[in-house]
Image 1 (tube, helix red, strand yellow):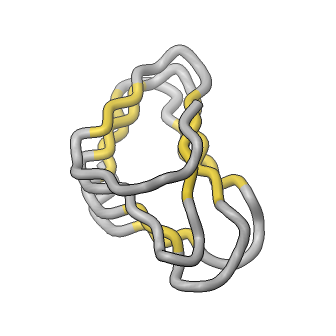
Image 2 (tube, one colour):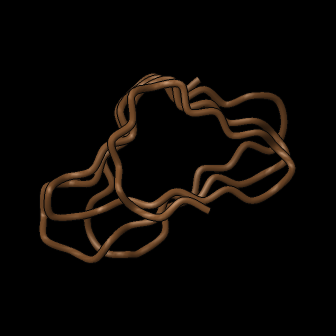
Amino acid sequence: FWEGNITITGTGGTYDIESLAGTLVVTGTVTTGNFTATARSLQVRGAGDVTFAGSITESPTCAIGLSKSGTGTLRLNGVNSFTGAIS
């Protein structure tokens, strides 16, 4: 379990969350920081499953996209309000 919020800030385009086995549950909110920047990408990877129990949101000035690679299953259980690309 990850029991806290995740705020994507600073430079960089892609941020990884990886589960090698079993299930990783992220219970907090995932959001972009309140700054002007190009879109950020959250990449979920690995053979394990990942569940976002909280919401994925973005600030008005920085969109967030979501991608999945690997054999694990991605679940979005929260109320999400991001507008970035999904792949």
